[in-house]
Length: 225
View 1: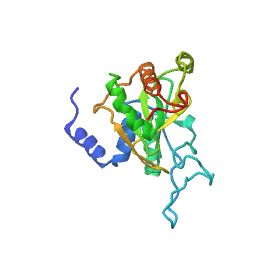
View 2: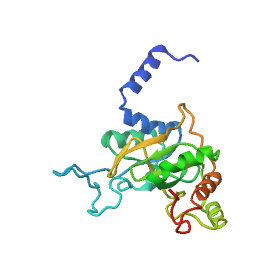
View 3: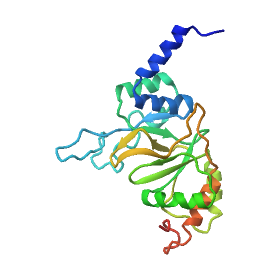
View 4: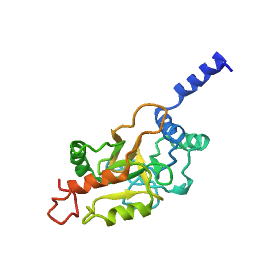
């Protein structure tokens, strides 16, 4: 059945009228089927130019970059819900709920991340999308369970304590977002196209990160950069 030209133009017009941030969130949620939820976001700038978290905690350690209302369990791929959230809160950070059948992540300090990527490239490790914030970089990987992660970590003599693992029940802030530490961007952007981005298995990524950190003088508690 052929689509009516006028209807096709109407859909194109609606896409063009959708704000860029909302289009990006909808791609993540509906095209890639990655469940998202808005982050707490930032309060209005103070007269000194600082930005605090919009949540009630004045001592919030991760301003803007955490779930608050709604909570992480509300993360969804439903287009209507996503549109409602980001229409009402257009500047809300985008939180990807990790685990299950969708992307997980391994994150490390930003300085280490910037220096680790060329090392991983030299080792021949194929990477997927990489999210960069001013403080931490997150390497997105294929879904993994806690049991498998435990087995992989148990097999290592040392694992850098600076690594964090975002699996079942976790989340990662993804672009386009602004959090207390600054802008969130793609260091390695997802491939263009309607399909969900390719993701590497966690094992070779973890192996390479541990190998790269093996020279750390403190016995592997941080990456050797």
